[in-house]
Image (tube, rainbow, N blue to C red):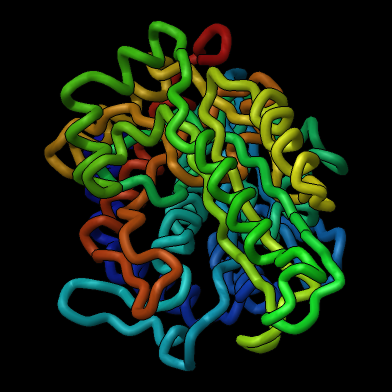
Length: 417
């Protein structure tokens, strides 16, 4: 089968691919609580129908991870496809509708990231039928525990079957916008902070400090770290500051995104204190997060933050399950060019390499020295009410993943990207 034949085949299967995603969206897989059994069964049934091999690898019974792999007819490189099947909690029953309306598919996880995971599953199933033409190996990993840190998802796979899922290159369908290829992600540093005091009557401030006021002062001082810009390697600096990248970032992620991919952000996401307006609270709690770009050490941010917290007498801890270093792949790597060619064919526009503002499981591969790239639908609206993905974007991502994997595995290659 030629590249053109493959694209024609995908076009002929468009309605079947839409139906697969609609069924996927109807599978309740909110995390928390994390029960992804129905969603995993939907994936495995789709693969079984084509005879494509897969199995379940699970560290927790309700968090199944679908792992599949096959060899091509000739020696070559190992490409891994990764996506998650767990999604944000739903607002209401409508979030599980999988409805198709006005050129869009609706449902919790449509953008984050069932459309991207569906693209990986379809690419894997399609290329299994073409394995006699391929070189190397293709592996699929569809995991159940990305939304809450990945302990029982990708991390579990790295702990239990690392050699099977490591590969030479990773392609992930997290929402990026079809005009972007994400090669870099910020690290995270999450803190749980508590300020305590005796508390008492609001009219007696001489008897107790006010934890809410102390926390407000802490937030004001931590805010000084917000916006710190990172020094970047030359290739990364070129990629993120080119006019094309600035335009793509601002269009895809909102005006100002091109600045913030290079800067530290601080978000005091949860602040809770007090029971009654005329009481001095006995406690104020905060959950806060720093997003730290490549080029700035998280340890340096933590050192400055801890000095502030200690000076105010706060009790604090790092939330390890959601704290991890930044990661990046080569923005000029081979897979970038492959994705650009495939996307140009699918959308008529050449995507540019950019950084993510959020995180993904691709970091596990980058930490291991494997280049990892994200190409998926628009992230706008993910996690919100009436989450949706455009049918056109979804089918484009399906085509890009399948064609890119086909090209990568059609060449003997040398070293990894």
